Image (cartoon, rainbow, N blue to C red; front, side, top):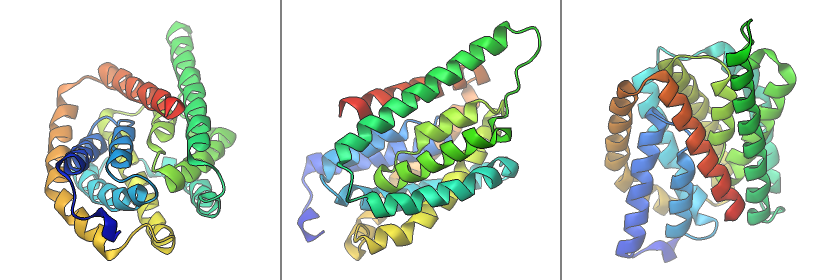
Amino acid sequence: MDALLPLSPLTLGYFFLAALIVGFTKTSVGGMGILAVLLMALAFPGKASPGILLPMLVVADIFAVIYYRRSCQWHVLVKIFPLTAIGIVIGYFIVDLIPFHIFQIVLGIIILAMLGMEVTLSWAGSKATAPVKADMSNHSLITYITGLIAGIATMIANAAGPIFGIYMLRMGLKKAEFVGTRSWFFLIINLFKLPFSANLGLITTQSLTLNLLAVPVILLGAWAGYLFLKLIDLTMFKWLIRAAVLFAAIRLILS
């Protein structure tokens, strides 16, 4: 990590823009966090990037939980957490085995497939005379698969946001419930990941010192995201989520 300092103006620009996006996406439209992953990879190539980004995500998660602490739907999280934890452990052991670019392509394809399924189900529901059941947490197989893939994706690339976002869209939640449930989910799994990342040497004293510089920018982004969420209606919110997920999937495949 000593090689990270001193930082060039371009690197600092990528770093602070990533911090702003991290804060914004945690309190508003999820799925956009993949942009922060990309910017951090440009700023800090190689394995340093995930280790620097993870504490920034935790800080943003804390802000998001403070804003939406009363809106979490815990029954959703109780069902998906166990497989997510298993996925994180699997990701820990395979992080050095799978070429990173191959994993990104596979992950992007999976996200596109999930997005297509979600849009199809939404369209079918709008055409049906009887309402289509929305709560995917009642479908154990879908919940387990989503949790497992999200766990692996978050451990290897901090890229579980699009997967969990698509899963959550089928719940029929209000905006605050959506963001509140997502916020608690990522706070808990990111805290769970910290010792694994530290053991892999991805988090160091110097990287944490660098993270301190990002805290004010993350807070600014979180505040902006909180205000933004109040201004958009639920339909626009859902389409923004889908657009962010689509962008994330294409970016992963083409990376």
